[in-house]
Image (tube, rainbow, N blue to C red; front, side, top):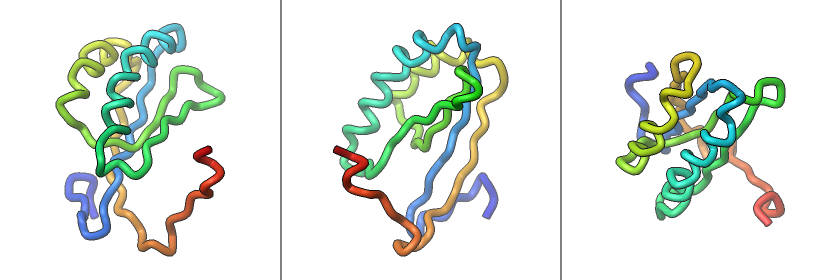
Length: 106
């Protein structure tokens, strides 16, 4: 499956990695928060978590779907990017390969 043709059979996940100057970390997170909250509010959203690289304070990664509410975040943060955004589609595996401990969400 190519990155340009995700399979909707079991769902898919779009993984994004971005790189900013670490001095912009606080401004980036402030600009991203409304977008993060909008994704979480979608009834279709089952899981959304942002990751940061412990070895690079300016490297963030997440799974996403691009919607209109991303426009303000992108307008505010794309100038902070120090290299191009990395985007990759992944197909979901069958249910037997999905797990999350309920206590992780308390």
